[in-house]
Image (cartoon, rainbow, N blue to C red; front, side):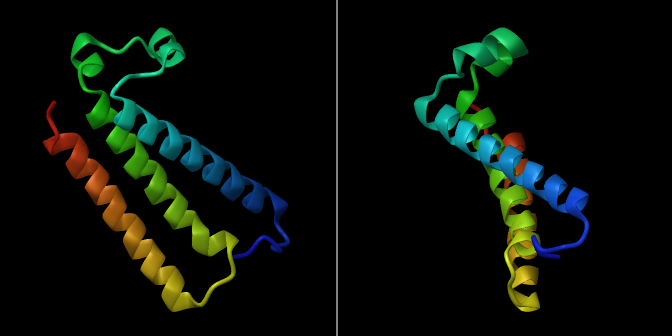
Length: 108
């Protein structure tokens, strides 16, 4: 798969996933570093009291999920040899496992 694929719907779907993963990565890092949720997010999402007290946990998990999605989509959008693409897929799986472990084990 590459951006020169004949199926533009598939490429558009992959680009949407890349944009969503970048959004998750940026806002997850911002939330984890600043230790505060963005105000519009609090208005829209209405997190519970226990969730409001854990911005590092939620932001870190969100950033790891975004990085995993971005890494998983890279081989399909950037031409690269198969072994490199397979290695990136393994890295994406490890990042997803780290996100799950971060969310379960991290307690603020």
